[in-house]
Length: 138
Ligand code: CMP
Picture 1 (cartoon, rainbow, N blue to C red):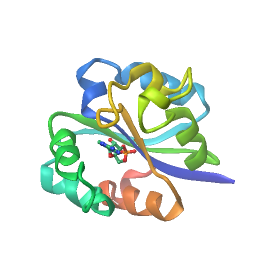
Picture 2 (spheres, rainbow, N blue to C red; picture 1 turned 90 degrees about the horizontal axis):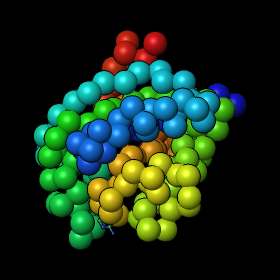
Picture 3 (cartoon, rainbow, N blue to C red; picture 1 turned 90 degrees about the vertical axis):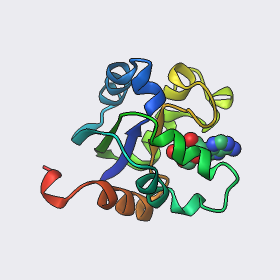
Picture 4 (tube, rainbow, N blue to C red; picture 1 turned 180 degrees about the horizontal axis):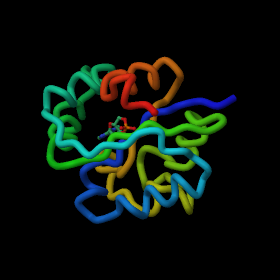
């Protein structure tokens, strides 16, 4: 079933010049880029986006990092998009990520891990709606 997911190319990957290489991996894996935009987000916007992690010890650092430079916000589409993107991304900690995954190739640490992908249908709906208006999803 065709499904949409939300993804971010994070500030670490943009800074290192990996945006094009990561987009190539995503397209090679069969994802259609429904929408993409570059943004510099505030720490408050990052806190709203990651609200489920508000009680975690890494929350403040994560939100500082996510607001530290430009990133790319994306809506991606394919069959089984949510699970397939998470497989393509690899484990949260790049040290545990499988060979060939985006995080294995491009991530530097568990926090600065190059890419985000929604972890379920409800999360994808929230995350797409947080960053994109309906008229941008064409
Ligand atoms: P992401 O998939 O965007 O979801 C939450 C983010 O929090 C995660 O990627 C990492 O960037 C960060 N994160 C998760 N666990 C840790 C951790 N133990 N220490 C630091 N950052 C973390």
